[in-house]
Length: 268
Image (cartoon, rainbow, N blue to C red; front, side, top):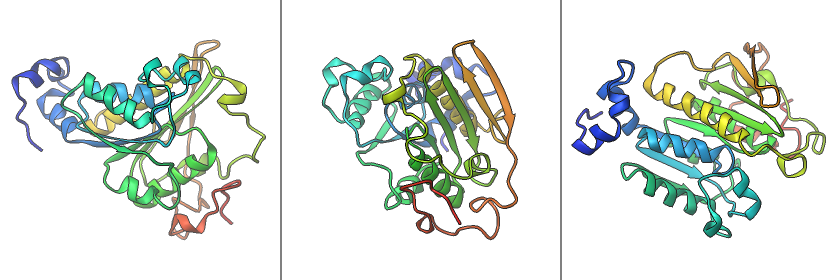
């Protein structure tokens, strides 16, 4: 880790540097960090925006989708001129305009069991901004088996949830052992989502990522935070490691290829 910051960086990150909890050493950690953002949509937009502004030196962005007009109500790093473009391209250009310090690594691909291990291998931590249960379980299982911390976020209508998992346990499956039956829980395309909601949830995810890089504070490990924008309330539930969790306890699965991710993602 290099502590040498040039004059422009000293200016750009001055509000970090004057903080005892960050300082030049912490900013150097951020500039040396490698963070992978899965998804460049509603949650990924604020995550990418604020991690780039904070000076996270290498941002990986994985997404296989293109920008649609209906995205623009909440996916704030994309604009009207980006409609039809791959989201990873639009996101990369946004970051490059915002902060020239940042190296953006784009992965124009859907996260699958065939590529997730390779995707996460080169990163210090993962921020999960995906929008379906199968990918959430896949990301949980791959990150936990690899010992890679990740920040989870999910949104629907007026509500969101956030948790951070340290790659050891408890994990996402300790809360939700398997996904709901397909079709029983609506997604944003069918139930809708308040446009500003992913901004709140994504900013909390970005905050967690920065804290993990800085090794400061108390991350949302061992607890899940629920946000209701309707009555503007937060509530927290403790998360304990399940003794029979098949992913984060001894004697569980040894590979994601032991799981079928197309249905309930259950592990027998």
